[in-house]
Image (cartoon, rainbow, N blue to C red; front, top):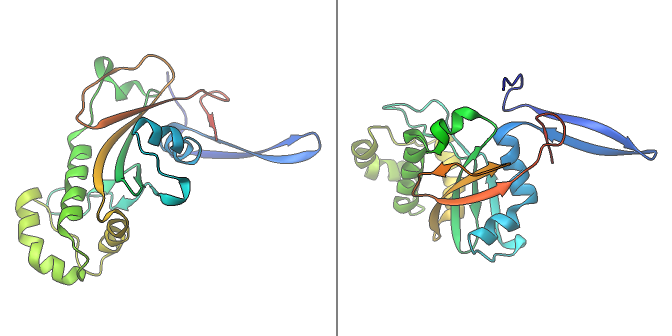
Length: 212
């Protein structure tokens, strides 16, 4: 099926019901489904992970950005779809949905090398940064980071290092868990991954849109 919408598009419309104005929020694609999941289905996600954290105990980062350009020698390494932090663990989320046939060639779902590498890089930062000043951290670890990933470490004073410190301060002391969050309407594809898999069933509200 050909789609005419950009995956980042969000449509907000006002729906008048019985003389009152109610806000009806419709969205399309993987990003919107992720937002729907963390805003409406977080209890179900944590239930599948056997994490009994109370809502006041967790923090959710929606699409935390660590730079989009990436590539060899650069410091950026992409965006997670979400990071969910509870007292028990920090869950690094990659989302997939069944709305795009390109997601499941031959009905097999695999994460790409770039997505897997993103988790490896964040885990390295999580395990090696102890809260010291970032300039000192770079001085001690830049060579090791370049040797491990063929990339440059986030420079001191950069927006990337600031974003990293914000998230790493929340994940410190917690176990990291890699999550594949799969949104589906029908049968699940064959899933080939070492990540923990969480599944959420969704339904369409209007055409190809999902209602929040």
